[in-house]
Image 1 (tube, one colour):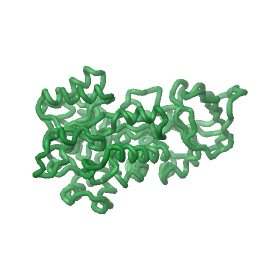
Image 2 (cartoon, one colour):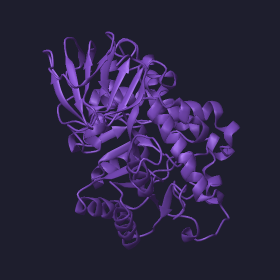
Image 3 (spheres, one colour):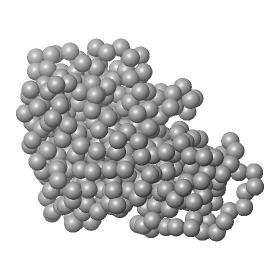
Image 4 (cartoon, helix red, strand yellow):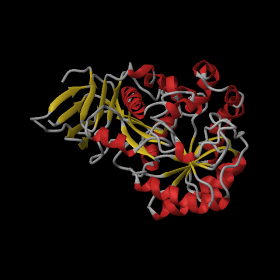
Length: 412
């Protein structure tokens, strides 16, 4: 790859929390080689004049399901795996075109998709995955109808199925080890009831304490952590006590629990956009009536949860959790959060904090020498108008991933 010299931009540095003028950036191969407030001398580099636009790190979505190509997740049990894979490729290309250069899949993504990305078989963001999400029988990854008595092994290993079932400490340990063996970067468990599953009300507690602790130990043995699907305050508090690190959703969290999670060093990952659009469009796209009835239970508390999490000082990542035809609304999470949070906090959640959750600090979500050259150029200042990050990348004339232009509408 040739060296690429970015000039004439305003730099949005999430660490500094502000727009900074007078900087230049030199990209060599797939990394940022130099960031300087003085002119960079690189005679052989290709120059890109950004025309006083904003340059910032590529975005990180910390809660996606790249294989969730249908809102009606039960339909994926009969969808051919090849079709699921092609649909996942299209979903990921859409994410990349919105400026998300990295995503964290929390149920369903398989390591084979990472290999396909690395081989250049399709374009998409960097992919980190938990493999299958773990659920007890009747929990949030159990998509079987009430009287469906098929064994879990009949469908759980299939690409497109987001989770697998395991009951009891020995089964949980085996499931964790198998997912880690197959390339999972962390472990995901379903520790609460959910919207898209048929038999578990929201207040439902998934797994015993002993099972959760076993998963935490297995993850720690592998040098990683557990992420948990959680809505209710009781479930969140219990997960924190058991050592869960990544707290997904957290819609009904209280200040007391948020403070306990902050003290434990946990990270919260709200996903408000999915409830907005499940409410508006879920039934149209096949969400079952029993699931539609659950939405408001978690949707209404979502905005308040952001305020509670911020007040407690609990670290907050950026997530979306969209399904099927709703993936196109991914960037709307920015404007939803902007109703109650400062823009810089939201930008950090989708850059530096996402990198921290992936344990890729200094490599992703930042503009530093040695970091991967995942960059965006924005038509304006996102700190003044987060809507610039919406509209399917319309306001992003440049998207770069790993030193390669995904899109470049500027000179140079």
